[in-house]
Image: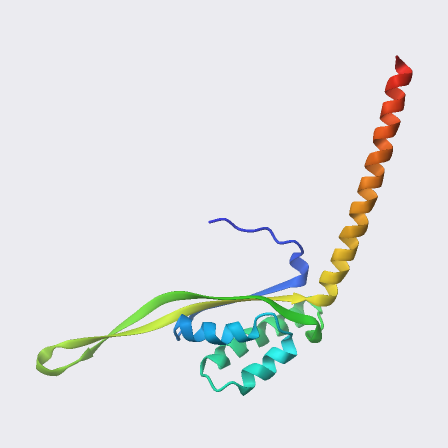
Length: 156
């Protein structure tokens, strides 16, 4: 398994809900509506949608933001859902008794929901900081090369 390295891990908050008892198709229908939206707008959308899936997604997002607020002192208004994905989980199989001693297989699908929240205020700060560091590194690199070239020619 290849793990991608994060640019700014201190600006992102991850939430993973595993073995949620619903089909992945039904969860994707809701996740597609909230991807890329702000935290407050997402909560309003989830409260007004009439689907059973909305409640579990609401709990995941609310839990992630509450943990970020408590552990890292982030402001709730600055979060945006940058990444949200739904993967299929295992199927829970049950047997239902039928007539004449036979049985019927009931399959209950599960899914795994991953939500990544990004803090807008900190991500903009880090981008400005990285841009200023890159310009400083380039200017230092040019001055060092010029000085080494002149000392090398003076030694001959």
